[in-house]
Amino acid sequence: MPDKSEPARLDDFLLGLHGADPFAEVSDASEAHRVEHASTLAGGEQECGAYPSSALKMRLLAATGRATGAKRVLEIGGGLGYSALWFAEIVGEGGRVETIDRFAEHIEAIRRYAERFGMGDRITALAGEADDVLPTLDGAYDIVHDDGWFGAQPSYYDRLAGLLRPGGLLVLSNWFLLEHAVTGQSPVDWSEVLGPTWAEDVKSYARRLAADERYDVSFVQNPAVALAYRRPDA
Image (cartoon, rainbow, N blue to C red; front, side, top):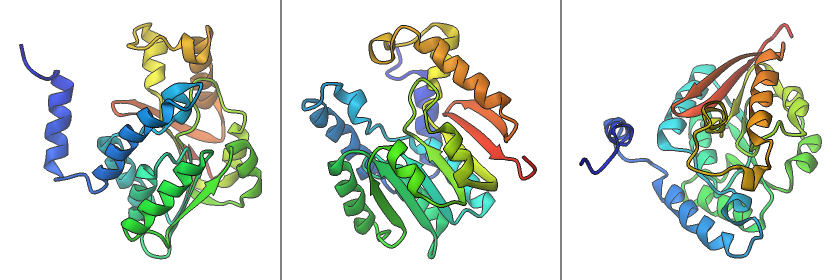
């Protein structure tokens, strides 16, 4: 029996084509931190939320960001700063990445890693809940990366469109939930975290996003992400 599944072997091969993940230490630290942090939280690892995106996903988003010439990025759900570092690399000197997280220890880690990788002048860590921070911000962002929503459509959904410039890109992670909801096959019982209606909630959000006339939307399932182009004429 092979040691790894075929998808895992393919991922390893694709990652190897590019060499080492430049921010792997932050990804590794996120995994370790989440387990430790969970011991102090009623909601465990899900409440901590420091689940770094895969390097393959970040390479996809980095290429997309470069293609759009992004110079200003907003992120919801900063974790320890892994994806913020990828975005900071693509915006280059003079570019800005603002990343929101509700935990003080995450904010501290984001700032520390930003300095560690020479990105301290490009990354701003904003402490608080997205619902509280987003109304204080001014658009227009080239990319908004929502890595904070999980399950149902977030209450701040319409605010995202107001912060994104016409022709900008809304990036939504965590769409692996859509495959779980549609197929009924999941390695996790999400009802324990998201409640009994989680599957319909996820599908409803997908329908709402796809029907939103402000966007042209594409769903990708491997790596799982939704890309919503903000129509200039909407």
